[in-house]
Picture (cartoon, rainbow, N blue to C red):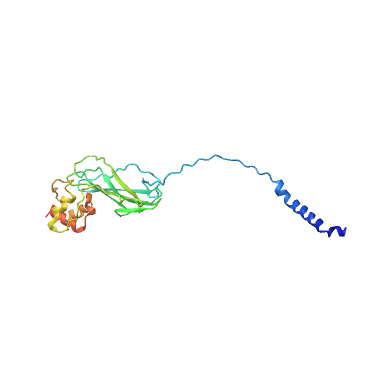
Length: 228
């Protein structure tokens, strides 16, 4: 018996049997079942979009607003929120409005800025300010206003359409007429009558239509031209 155990052939056979016993349960005992599943996916382009909300948490979608009552010569304001619900950064700013200049002018700010870049899911506070001329007629006014959003890499959004001058006039008291012709004459055919003082006009012009785009010196020059 001892002589058999020492033979190389016998040892090789025993090793093979031992390995087979150890691995046999894996190689021959496991049953693999495969099933296939059909699936569909729609691959779309990234979308850029934003939405208006009533609350800062952006949980209450807002489709229309009603500003508080306002008297001629006064301002009425309202706060809403805009959220970037797209997949790219958006530069938001004031867009066009159907408000007639004779009834009032709108100014929108985004967290206190004229325009602001919002990352995806970011929310900004929008303050809507309506300035009503002193000679505005009474009655309910229905109007729309818009907010522009430009995705990263796109062109900057435009503000309320105006007749943009080809060159900005030098702001001195002598060119108030030129500033008026460049910025105001498209809405006002002539210099509007007003009972405001010059200092009151400076404050009013800054928030009126394109007044926010004027420098402080230009606003002063225009106020001086309207009311010397």
